[in-house]
Image 1 (cartoon, protein in one colour):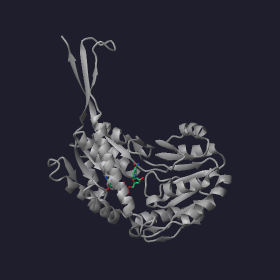
Image 2 (cartoon, rainbow, N blue to C red):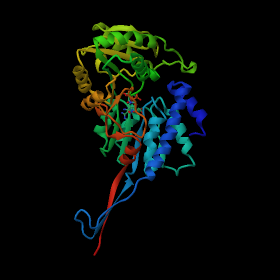
Image 3 (cartoon, helix red, strand yellow):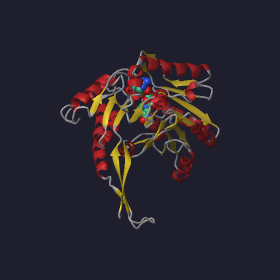
Length: 398
Ligand code: NAD
């Protein structure tokens, strides 16, 4: 991949609309992921239990990891290399074969990755199948030869896969509605920067993007002017001109974001900035006074749209986070780290970030989604586990 850097970066830019810089970051992160997977796999050791321990007499139990067999990797459009390789590489390194179904908008990259393996891996070990998920997805998932599936994408498709997959051995990374809860006004410049980069990088098309801001009236009134200023300074346009806000992956994605704005405004939401859409280019939009009756309250826009939800106290913010249909990540901002640590324990999401935007990396960390956000665990070590099973051989000494 490193040798083919120029072509891969260009494909990311042209196929999914990232800037060159973001594409290069994704590629570097992926190469590191691959290196770390090899390093972690080498650390696996056989576990030998007995004799003369745990009351065991004259028995040796040898327990070690073996590949599960044939894995299916299905990736979304937004990190077409990283989220594909984070499934494919652990599976291959541990001795499985893989059927890879890239996102429809990401198929050129998928085909390119397939071509890279020709002559490097034996035929049939790594297989790329492109096509629309709605047309070929069921055929792949229900194939009896498939031993396990790793899927990243929308909650709707993930839940269907769990329902129809015969092996029931499925890891799912799904949607999110990661809240940022702001507990005090000690450094609102920093908080606003985190909300902008966390919520709006790659135009909000990230599962771990900050997808709502929750705070009290007093803090919101101080935060909003700084936040609006920073959002209005963002460059909007083409990834080829290194704009920060770039067109969404499809026009229908932009229409969905528009419908969330329209619904929120009709129910009393106040547009602070944005609400301008040109085909699939959505200007970054902040909406204040978002309430429970609005779709935006708990829907994932997957676009540059951040709701501000005013709460009467922080217990209400925690309740909102815990009652969300999603449970991927949350971020807490404030100066009393010990207090935030205690609050983090009460928040029921896969991960809680203290004084940082929500994010998946570093990739060595386990990555977990609860409720509609996932099933199973990803991350370098956990992916090694989920693509293997423990095999035991017990030798009885006579
Ligand atoms: P998507 O669900 O539309 O597509 C994901 C993949 O599933 C694509 O490869 C698609 O072709 C395939 N697919 C579609 N229908 C299928 C079917 N019936 N059977 C099998 N496969 C099928 O998602 P997307 O638009 O590519 O990505 C955006 C979504 O992914 C968002 O909801 C986002 O939150 C989520 N996401 C989650 C994570 C995470 O780690 N939790 C990371 C990135 C994206």
